[in-house]
Length: 230
Image (tube, rainbow, N blue to C red; front, side, top):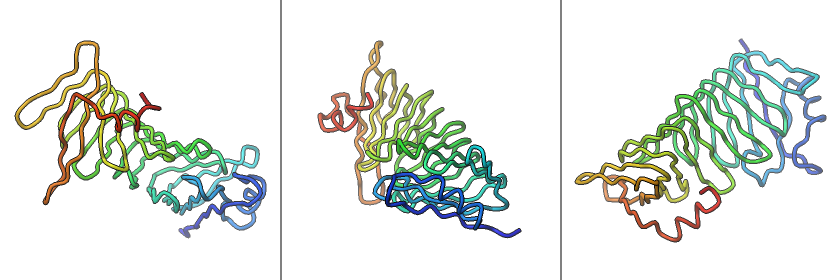
């Protein structure tokens, strides 16, 4: 079956064009654009694995056989078994395998809110990056600030930890455990107070591998980095 490429290009007069781009889909089987190209998730390109279904009343385009998506601004890319999107509003996919600055992500459902520049992932969620593996019920990735927030039964591997919430600084790789937590180091285990607390996991790059050092006194710079999400 023929594959169709779907490209999103920025408009000059408004941030997210809709009417002109939907017309382009109908005429050319090419989707329209998410603009402004200075924002995250503004230059999405979609490749369909099969036919596309366009709801002319809602403007939503569905790729029932899935496809792949690349965001040229952030470098986020993923494949999915099913994709639906509304120009300038959202893109939603199921059965997702994704790569980005945050690492490699697999999840049952991923939804990108274009206007808010937020990626939400849920269901059988695993994120892997060098020195870190995190599993949780939910992940919110704030693309503007490059901060990822995990919630719901969060567990980690390399290093080993559990926490109510986990915040990841995608730029530095540093991690903050929030609420009730436990952290198993090589020689010791650290646990939160009964009322909960914060534990900093600072990324350390050695010659041959990456590891994390734990500190119950969180650095002011990391607290400031995560201030809006605590």
